[in-house]
Image (tube, rainbow, N blue to C red; front, side, top):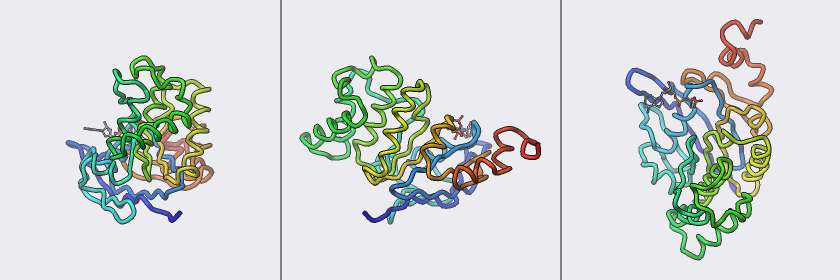
Length: 244
Ligand SMILES: Nc1ncnc2c1ncn2[C@@H]1O[C@H](COP(=O)(O)OP(=O)(O)OP(=O)(O)O)[C@@H](O)[C@H]1O
């Protein structure tokens, strides 16, 4: 399978009186897992929102392969092959697990037969088959998060952007999620960008890390490089820590 690249080029995002992203560049290839980390308020969610068309860019461009994503609506970005999950889970509470996932496949244009088949496969893959008939509102927190990932995958994306998928999960749920996510790039050939505050999960899952602080990239590279980077130590632990 030939490689496609999601490229964020010198992107800035401004909210009233605040530069939330300042000339951030990031690249993610299909088959790759990149961790997007940084202290609270550093711009991680804003970067995902920028990629998926939820916030406007002040400057810069975003492309996926030969498609320019910047300027597209969230729906158009999704149709171009970029899916996401949200920090706060967004499910249809009065629909079943099966219907939630099926709706996402139908929205991408799959026929009823294909959508149902795809949904069943995803529920099997994510360990949700036994919950197919349960309503969204009755699920545990961990199951809701897994349904959200299944919904994102139902669109058969080239790139999947996950915003804190393990937040609120217990250790066993996080471990199961780690295994599921680790298999996605190889199995589906997609590129995975993941934000999480669980450094154990991030370090084990990601091939590369991209670190933001105050809207700027302060380090990128493999875990060993990032962990020992003075700017990263300072951003996480406060001024002076890098020299301590
Ligand atoms: N819609 C918005 N309007 C105004 N300011 C915003 C908006 N969204 C985010 N911000 C601000 O932009 C900055 C970056 O926020 P963002 O949510 O991207 O950070 P984050 O790194 O994802 O944080 P966390 O780890 O706490 O989720 C913060 O100062 C935040 O308050």
